[in-house]
Length: 175
Image 1 (cartoon, rainbow, N blue to C red):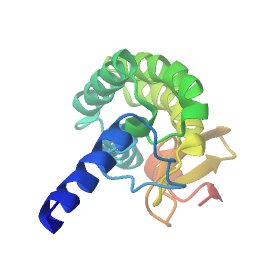
Image 2: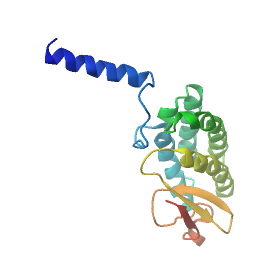
Image 3: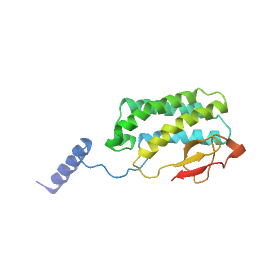
Image 4: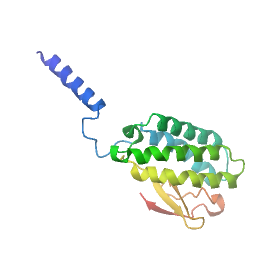
């Protein structure tokens, strides 16, 4: 065998065993490219809109979350969701909750309705975040006034439940 053939054979073996799940799971993965990231991107856009007392883009982004969560639940694969195999069933059970809550959020017509629905969406999102084995997790923030959590990327608290009137109300409870 030539060196080129050996390299190709080893590369193919790695690819096949990886696809079959034979290789051990890495302890963490990069968040980019996971279903968690695909859902977190529109979630963060909704968070920012509500913190700014706006509904702009909320329905569109909520529909994106709903559709992504539905698709991920229908063809669930733990690695794509960013969780280990032992957390797969738990994560798969969360996805319909994420989809349903996002669907309700997409139908909200007032800030009050949207904020309430965002709270219902945030609960399973925080649970998913806790299972996520990747790097660069969003922060979990908790508002003591409304007693609800949310996820956000920034270190500066931006409260989506109280908006501009109490924008900095909340505490980062998990980095």
